[in-house]
Image (cartoon, rainbow, N blue to C red; front, side, top):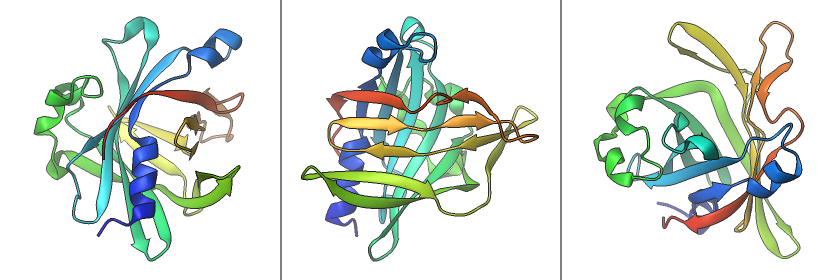
Length: 196
């Protein structure tokens, strides 16, 4: 069963987003990105799942960081976000803008990423629902791709009209940030809603 709160979170996150204003204001630190978070029918009995990818506005035909974001209530009043790696990335790349590419996506070709789970808190801010994440454990979010191990910090704050993402790559040797939200969150504005 999907609760009204979980559905609201899913509706806030589902869509096409841009950080164009931020990139214009601070081009030294922020690339102009397009972010897609499109609902997909995975784990649909108890969860809302989104296929996410992003692209530099100058290279919209080359989206990167394909992933599955699963939103679910692990117990009453406790919402978590789980991240999954997509093994068939080349087959579904571009699915954010072209959902027909996602029809082959299923639970057999994604992999849960241990340590990449977030707890979600809800507050009313100026009368609007605002969801903010915190890491669910002290374990670092790590994954291996093409023989290399990566460590990332994940997080977001979202309302019906804005999305702040805190994702950044971490140097496992000294904990320093390598890429992503080094100078603060990416600030996205929603261009298009994708229905849940």
